[in-house]
Length: 357
Image (cartoon, rainbow, N blue to C red):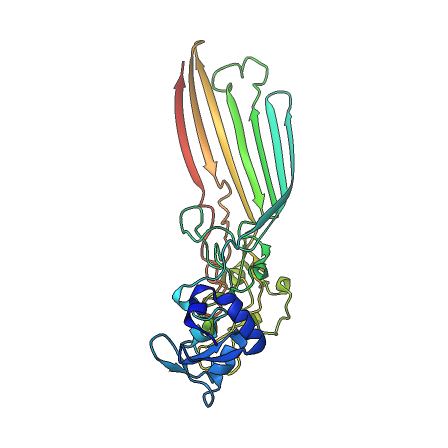
């Protein structure tokens, strides 16, 4: 005999005993059936002739079709709802960073200085950042940030390259005090005190995911997953980049035909879609380069006074440095794969004048 006192005080031993001997038990004290496992609960919901399932509001349910609206009754933990914001996983984040870093520096004769720093690295995680959207955790299209993509059951399924991963980064800096040639013609303030310096940066682009705004409807998580492989291009991401002119690449960085939206789950109604099978962060944006250059002229006025003029050029060659696509949602195929933003502004020149004594 099952009593309310047993259920209220410590139900776990009672449920374990019932699960072994009587997994679906009639409880007179409740005037209802007590189902002790999720599998049997789903079976009861689908057997309208034998069982009647009511929620706390007295509404009866029988599941014969998976729909967006009955997600609460098919949840991994009955009673919770992902579409209402419930999360049943915590402390899910993990990250690992490994790198090889090498630096070469040399101060040569006659005012020449040179330094090169190279980093070969790998960031592996399942979430990159927190759920807060502050300046340190802002995410771009195609990056999950602090959210798990696709099913919430297994945080390890998202384990891959992190949102901040740049395998290669090379930074070269230099400075050169231009010597004054010998001879009376060069021995004046106009030719003395010239110097140049600069910084050159090359680095890998950032990774991103192809998303699907129609996926996950059956699990209360519409739009929270990745796209699906269409089968046209196989499953190797390296073969899915657009080849051709720069305009072709900017218009469709990835081949749209390689992807499709999610399909409806088994016994599903319209909108009750599953998740995609394209892994998180399978793709990477274009590599990036930048050249900064400075010219400095120092003029000495007597012994204790110095006038310094400098011109700094950022993005000296005025090359467009593109980010990864701003539209990576296969649910909107018309804009999918378009690159419309740069990560470095157009060439900027600034002048400065300082006086020292």
